[in-house]
Image (tube, rainbow, N blue to C red; front, side, top):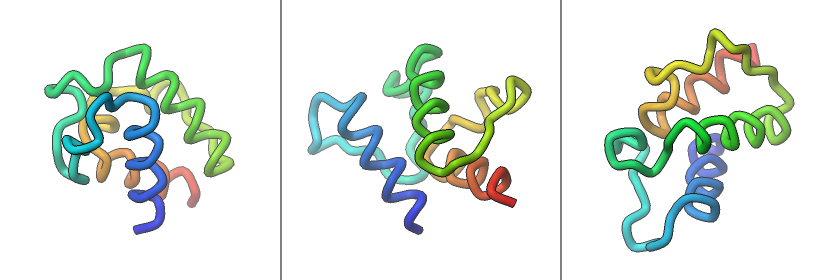
Length: 80
């Protein structure tokens, strides 16, 4: 659960103009326009530093960044 909180906090601070519309763990970040390709790369950089993991080019696919829960799953997978 901690991963979800950290990712949600980063998305709120970096990508949200209106904190009242904070996405839930299952809301689509891509369909809503919260994340675009540049945002994904910024998020990947944050994830690598924050969680001390490596995200490969093969991991940067829409399915891994659809929502916060998908992102958390990717992080857990990389943490081993």
